[in-house]
Length: 159
Image (cartoon, rainbow, N blue to C red; front, side, top):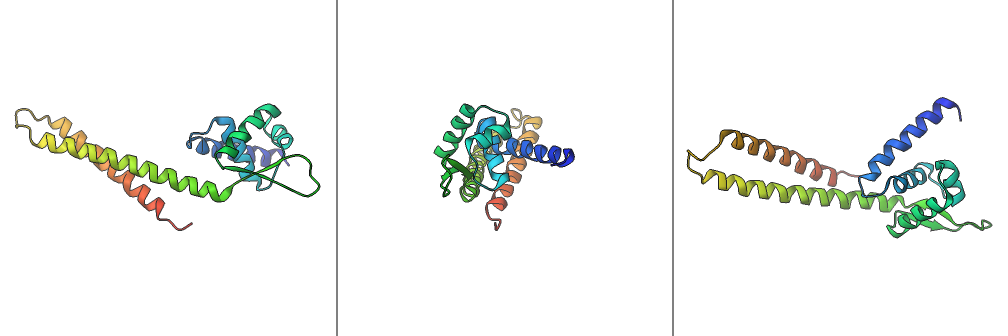
């Protein structure tokens, strides 16, 4: 690979790994999954170790964790004695949907709690009300509604 394409490829891998870390993976697990996902083929621990510049022990630990999460699967290839691993792409899509639903549910819960506070605020006497709090509460409710709309749209996108 030329230096330019290698730089771009490494940048893509690092940025996608940062995204994958949002799914509660360690940085090295995210990099391993990302590398397997981008490569699109089964690789050995030695391949991963060389590509990511980490020890084989570190690769083994990360891959084991990813296998336990069903994000990576062990595959068999005739004539290859070493274990091969590849990203479970279908499960990755499923995991993304689960997390979107989780985030949507959490946002909805926060919205409900904020609406309860709004009701309590409206029951206050005029002397007790704080206009700044009222304004901020409305802004937070609007923000949470935008989040809910976004997550709902993302959940219903055709893939």
